[in-house]
Amino acid sequence: MNRLCLEADHKRKTKRVTIHPGEYYVSNTSVVISTLLGSCVAACLYDPVNRVVGMNHFLLSSERNIENIPVCATESGRYGVHAMELVINGMLKLGAKRENLSAKAFGGGSLYQTHHGSGGFFRVGEVNSHFIFEFLKNDGIPIIAYDLGGNTGRMIRFSSDDFSVLVRRFRKSDTPSLLKKEKEVWLKSIKQEKQESVEPDLWT
Image (cartoon, rainbow, N blue to C red):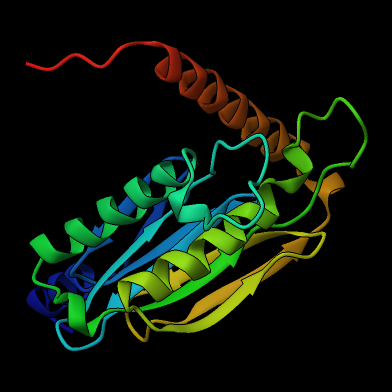
């Protein structure tokens, strides 16, 4: 094989990207997007016609789930809506069409003890799982596959080549650093939400 062929093969190598809580990534080239999920949820979106993909990793900030009210309509739900719109709008800029989008969703594990003083964090996985179903239904995006809930964490790899998602489950004892990071992100977002609720809106 000559040098030109070797360079062409090198250029075709699949890019690998890892995202963390609060992040997202979109692409219209060959890529594998990975992330680790505890109570967080990741939505893997793709337009198979224009071959554009995207993934986000979000954690709703709610301390509680308000009964009989859709999660998308709650104060914390706006964080999830924002996370979804970021990845969708990013994909649209790369040539995707909203009517072509399909989704796969993962995460939302219950990895925390349900004792008093936990601040409701043990329910975050459940709330996140409810949210992603609500959002996709409201937005008319079909959910092709999902692996949500349970008492395990997940490592996922989303491939743009065939839109498949590899899922590996793990126990909470296997990645204590992930759980610590998730709780830090959750507590930070709770603090921010409370500050925004008492600060007056400024119109300019």
